[in-house]
Each structure stands twice: as structure tokens, then as C-alpha cells.
Length: 105
Image 1 (cartoon, rainbow, N blue to C red):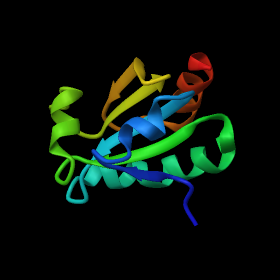
Image 2: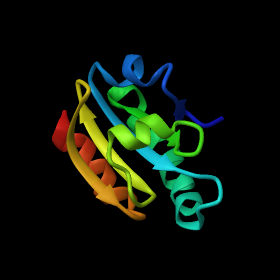
Image 3: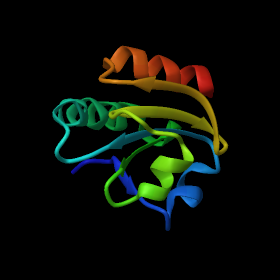
Image 4: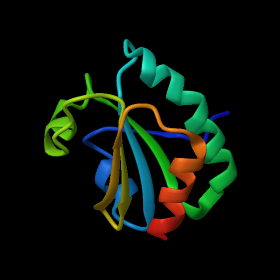
């Protein structure tokens, strides 16, 4: 079972306001987004409780996509205590994302 959390307007703030979170803004119809899914699953398994790994479906959580000025997906944000500390556009490799999480801790 995946440890990646699915966030929306109702739980986004509570899940990302404390500690480090990596949040992927994606959509089910987006090919590159689907390629990133298994990478996020691997990171969630490896990172454990050190950080929250989460996804936001831009189609069902449009207000969050607007808040973060998401214009292209996948858009990946690393947050520390609710504030963006790093962001990426497009598919990233596991090493890059894990390094970003570790740098934010």
C-alpha cells in the first residue's frame, strides 16, 4: 500500500503545516505525472516519517493549483512548515527529490 497521501483543500494545510512535505501537483490524464507516481511511492517508503509525501489532483483541487501558481504539471513543491523552500517542474528522479527533502530538514 502506498504511503503517498492525497491532499485537497480540506486537508492540505493540516498535512503540510508542520515539518517537511513534498507535494506533487498532478492529474490522472497527464502521462509524465503517471511516470512520477512510482518514484513518489519509492520515496515515501524510504523516507518514512521524516517527511510527508503527497499528491494534489489539479482537476479536483483547482484552488490549490491557483494558490501555488501551477501552470504546468507535474509541479513538485518541497515545503517546510507550510512554506515553499524548493520547486520543480516536470518529472524528476528519485535522487533529486530525496536530496531536496533532506536539504529542507
